[in-house]
Image (cartoon, rainbow, N blue to C red; front, side):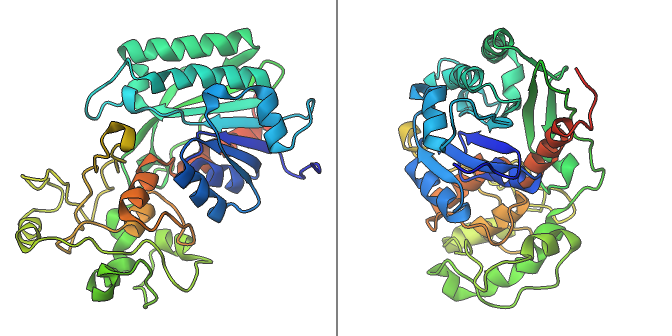
Amino acid sequence: MGTPTKPIAIDVFAGVGGLSLGLHRAGFSVIASFDLDPINVETYRKNFPKTVAIKSDVSRLSGSDVRKLSGLGANEQIDIVSGGPPCQGFSLIGKRLLNDPRNQLLIEFARLISELQPRYFVIENVAGLMIGEARAVLTRALRVLRVAGYRWVTPIRILDAKDYGIPQVRKRVIVLGYRKDQGRPSYPRKSYQPVTVRQAIRDLYAIGRCPSLMRADGFDGKLGPASAYSKKLRNNRNSVLSGCQLCSHHPDIVQRFKNTPPGSSEPISRFPRLHLQRPAPTLRAGTGKDRGSFTAARPIHPTQPRCITVREAARLHSFPDWFEFHPTQWHGFRQVGNAVPPSLGSAVARRVMRALQGSEETA
């Protein structure tokens, strides 16, 4: 392949590309992504047409495989490898399945990093990775990386999305690693500018007043006044806003939603109702077909008696309005809930870029 003018990134366990978008915003050229879910790969290709998106089981990939599939030469330098291995077994929400075979993908990811020898790596995972037996899996993965010549920023930190300009409480472990011959990166500083649900979705209220969206996914009507937050996400959007199909609720459920105060949970469904003046609670993904296809609790709109749309969830996750998700609601909500918020990804990636450019302290 031709030599990119920007630092080279590879995104593993990429999902629909939340972290890839963050890397792009920070100035990296994401040349390839890998994910096992064909629906995610298809969606990724729509949003990142210049990136090679590959359906692959990472546990069966070698470093040389990745280079070949990415179009990289055997000795071509990779600047960063990033990824969030499937983490359901480590999650603090619901049952912790510490014998879940997907937990071993963290070890496989460490192996892949050691074989590719990038200058930097980023591992993203749920906060539960730092607790009990799950921490032992992380320790094993880091041991593989230490032997391969890597260090990481200590103490390893749990970052909360709400501290980085994202209207959602979402705590994630971020491991910032660097090869011993590279400068040491640092964790991003908190923005100290909390964004509320109102600022994120107030301009989308017209969606809930459009009956045709019970059957259609796209909204081409007029949006409301934009906040500073939503204005950034609205830039360069297509004329039709995707992800806007409304959920159809039984009248009894509508009444229960009406009776649920903002900031509390509806007693029967346990769906949380969003509060206009606060960030949203963590958006959950639910489970895939291999775990029963359970739908996660979807937040109730703060002023309308309905669940939020995929687009509103995307706003709460900091995805721009041009970004497309699978048109089926079940897949679309899962894609948002599993993604790294792009603004969190870019905050982390910018610190790695600073280290790469020599703007951070050396090891």
